[in-house]
Every structure is written in C-alpha cells, then in structure tokens.
Image (cartoon, rainbow, N blue to C red; front, side, top):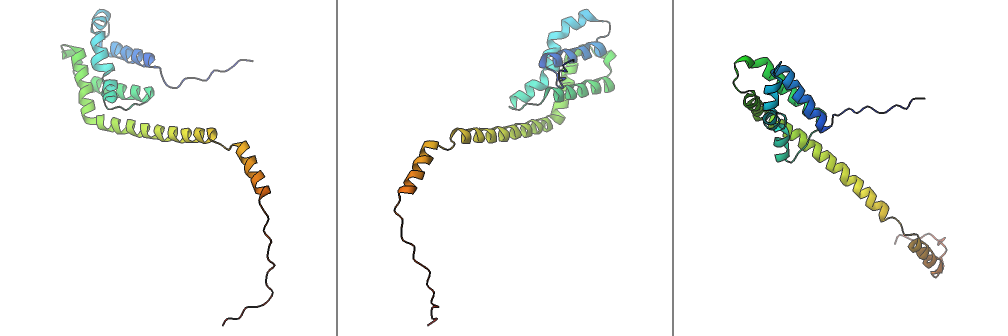
Length: 169
C-alpha cells in the first residue's frame, strides 16, 4: 500500500524566490540569459524582495502563497501596461513598478499582515493560558489534606425546624 504524503500548499521562500525570478526571466528577458544573470542581484533586491523588506519594516508578515500572488499581480501589471521594449534598464523599472504598487496598496497589505499577527497572538496567548492552567492544575496532596481537615471538623448539632407558625405582630 502506498503512503500518501500531504502536498505542500505554500511554497518555501527559496521556491518562491526561484518562481518569481523564473517568471521575470521568461517574460522580461526572453533569449537573454547573460543579461538576466548580470541583472539578477538587482532584480532580487529591487523587485523580488522589495515587498518582504516593506512588510518587515512594518513588523508584519504574510504567507508565501499570498506574497507570490501579490508579486505576480505586480509583474503582470508591468507586462500589461509597460512598454518593455523601450525600457533601458529593466531592474530599475521593475523596482519602480513595485514601489508604485506599494505606494497604492501597501497600507492594505500592512493591515492584512497586522490582522494575521493579532489573530496569531490571540491564539498563542489562549494556548499559553491553557498550558499554564494545566501546569498549575490541582495539587492532589493538598486536596486530600483538605478532605482530611473537613472530616476532622467538629460537627455542630443541627436544630430541628420549628413547627410553630410565627405571628406577624
């Protein structure tokens, strides 16, 4: 019987980086592997990792799948609306496209990351409280000692209920 491994839904950071660079090379550098290799360091810094830098400065994070979705949207818009044949230096132009996109949509990504951070913090604080409650659970020795004290307590006589009716005056 074959064991089925669960398929990973989110790419790792290395896979994400390679996917985005492959997209850029395929669509912006067709047939130019040498030029792409020369521009690769700046493409990484100015394009592929720009959103990560922006979010890290804001102290928020998003999933790698969401990161890929955003970056592919930016790159598709650059392809659709840019005159890529007349651009003199692609890394600078693509970097400017990412900066323009962040100027318009960056605050929304920040809010999205902040909301995710707050929900994770709420979940973790709840889990921590549960763990602490488990560690500070009942002390069985103390409970048995309390039970022994209750058994040793002097019994008070119980007064029988009065059978007379009390007067109102």
